[in-house]
Structures are given as structure tokens and as C-alpha cells.
Image 1 (tube, rainbow, N blue to C red):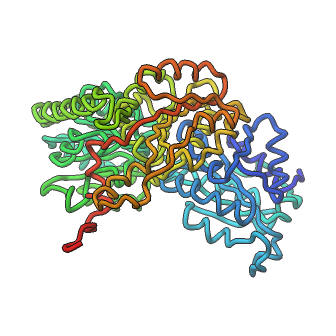
Image 2: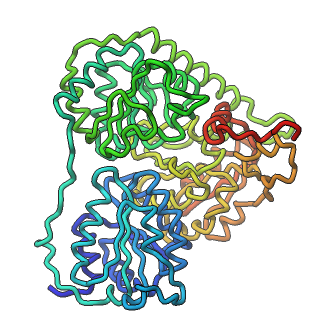
Length: 572
């Protein structure tokens, strides 16, 4: 059968069950857009900015077992999409980034044409694999290879650059003749499994860590079985949220350091840490000297499908290259019902530390207002929203101070119900993430918690939500600051540090985009506003006026991210 390269691309996407295509109009990808727009198989949506297309594709992959496509035009469209693709790369999330290019005979060597860019080189740094389709007949092979690599090993984004003449060129193909390559699930060898079992049985103060790899491999039930079988202390990373139910008896918290002092103390006192699908990111207080070194005698086991991840961020007693589900199934079988040496008294002390921390943050929320200003505090807002969000909702947290309080009070008990980008953690990902999650789950509530600074970065994507009927609920903690940087300006006693923002009335902005917009200044008005947002049948924005509220774990970030930097030199 003969089709265009663009047509073959769409047929292969359908073959792999990929439905979602997001981007900004691109003349050079006109045939892809035309085909996706006409075919009811695809959920095809155009955004207001290419970065948002990347974030929407990211959210689809995080909340489903599939992946999505993002695209932008040649040159500036390609460069605009970089933050969205880079965020997926940092989070190990699969997506296919498509960029068109100028005619194939003009790009090598580059002729400096209008809007031209070194697209292949640019994306090579932020994708697992990328290629330029230079011959039409190789298109089926390259598309299949891209989709396979995106989802195997440590998942991640892949990129195909398609010159516009190649996209329109005829391509003879037979999809049935191109074999679909299965996803490998490597298991530990018998000696490796025996070594792991010995460490687990011999531990006195063990901690189990569930990372995003547990979710991606479909190993939630296997991890929960291990927690139940052993009774060990358990924590989850940002990407592993929901793997362990929030009410599980031995659960110490999630999101690394934002889980609180019980979680931090447990990781520092543990004699064994077994991390599954976790890369020990900046959120994890493990091997972050000088404040969080690995204690003498502590043993760390890392189980990851990517051999390059082993030992990258923490010294290991044992590293296993294995699929999370295959390894956990083998470990549960090998352990059987045999007892371990784990000390129940130590776990009880860690849970007591967790309760003390919870009492501390609840007291901050109980205060409701910030002393001296009379404005709502962010802890009170986050807790109030957590009580309004339905159990089946997908939660989206943007970067910034709002993220810290949201993590503290909102803890999903099921995986793929929480969307955040801990790899990059940048501001502005929130609204496009919410749009992507709603596109993938039109029948489920999607609630975004963000700040005024972050919302200003991608506020235009409210129009995307309104245009496609994506009735997300966006709650903005509007404190008129770049909140996470405000303490540094105060420490330096610099009123012109650049963290103060003009207070924007986002309720009016939302109405301008065709959304429901409400402004809230009193906590008792929030339930009513939230209820109206749920019933609106269109995107809704609740703009809550508040004041910056320091988080109890704020001190962690300077110790880890800014370790060794002295902002107050002698005599300064």
C-alpha cells in the first residue's frame, strides 16, 4: 500500500494505541495535522504555546499506560517546545516529539533559512533518542523504533524531525510486516535475588521506597504486598505517589523531604534502604552531604531497569538491573512468610515523629491567617482544598511554594492520580498538565493547585481548556510573590530583589478566556466557589488571595540545592 510518510506515521500511532496529539499549527506538518484532525480515533488539540503541548503529552503518559504526541513548527516552534520535552526527559516519561524541518536538500549543510534551527542537535540533549527521516521508505522503521525506545528500559521522550518534502512524499508500507517489539521485563538472577533476600531478612531498621518505576511497570500491587508481608516502613517519591495508600499502617509519607521529619529521620537512621524504580533525586534526603550524608553502616539497594541509574546518586550495597514488577514478584515469592529482624519499636518511633510533624502543619493551617497581614495562609488553603477534592480526582501541582503545601495536605492513595514534574519542577507546567490530564480522563475531576507566579507563565492555556471543553478546576494561591525566592531577598535585606509581583485578578483573566472565574478572600467562601466550579461545565479558576507562608521543610532546599554557597560573606 502506498501512502504519504505523514499518513504512515498516523497509522503506526493507531497500531500502538496512541490517541492524543497536541501542538501548535505547523504548515510543514500540515498532512499530519489534517489526518489527525479528520480521524475520530485521535484526540487532536492545538495549544496556545508549544511548551504546553509537551506538558499535555507528559500528563497523558503520567496518568495512563499509553503515551502521546506533541508537535511544533520549524525553528521557533521547535525551540518553544523544549521546556515541555525536557520536563518529560527529567521525569523519565515517554512521549513522541515531532518537528518538521525545511526541505531535506536545504538542511544539510544548513542554509540559514527563515526560522531554521539545528533541531536534531537541540533535541538530542533532551530525548532518549532522535532521528531525522531523510528517506521516505525508512519512515515506518524509524517511527516504530522511536515508539519502542520511548517505552523500554527507563522510559523517556523521543524525537523525530521530518523535512516537509519527506512528510509529503509517497511511502510504500505494509504495517503487518513491521513486527511490534515487546517490552522486556528483566528479572534478577538467582544469586542477585538471594543477596537481596539476605539483606531484607537481616535488616533491623529497613525502609522501602517506591519510585515512578513502580508505577510505570504496573507493580503497585506487588509493592503493596511487600509492604504488607514485611511490615517495613514505606515511603513514596513524587512520581511514586499513590503506590502505598496514605492510610497504610507503616507509611511514613511521600514526595521525599516534603513528607516531613518522620520520613527524613527514617532515611537517615535506616540500616537498609530498598529503593525500587527510584533515582534518589534532589527531593530525597539521601547522599546529599554535608547536611544529609549516607550514615556509616547504612546499606542501600537500588532496583532499576536502567543500568546507568544504579549508583548514580547514592552508594550501593546492591544494585539490580530489573523490571520493578518482575523483581518484586520474585522477592515476594522468595521471602514467603519467613520473619525478618525488623524492630517494631523503631518503626513506632518514626510513626510518632510523623504524627508530631502532622500536628505542626495542622497547627499552621489552624491559624488560618498570616500574623500582621490578616490574609489567608497557604497551609489553610491547601488543607481546605484537600477536603473538597473528590476521591477520584486527578491532582496537579505546579512548581513553587504552592507545591510544598499541596504535597503536605493532599496525598493520593492510588497511582496515576497525581501529576507533578519533580525532575524539572519549573513554574507554569500546571495548567497544561491539567489540560492533558483532563483530555485523557474527560469523566474525572482534575484539580490544579498553583501560585500566581506559576499561573502567569502559561495562563494562555486557559483558552485551550475553554475551547475544548476541558473543565479543569484551577485554585491559585495568589500571594503576589515569587514565593520560594522571597526568603532569600529577606535574608539579604533587599527590597529590590525582584520577588514582588503585581497582584493580578485571575478571576477576571479567566472570564476573559471564557472560563468561570471567582475571587476568594475568606476560607468559608471556598467550598461554595469549589462547588460552583464543579458544576460549571467549563474550566474554572478560583483566585484565592493569601500571604506567603513558610513551610517547615523550607530549610532543606538551601542545604541541598545551594550547598556550599555563602550568601552572607564576612563583611558583606
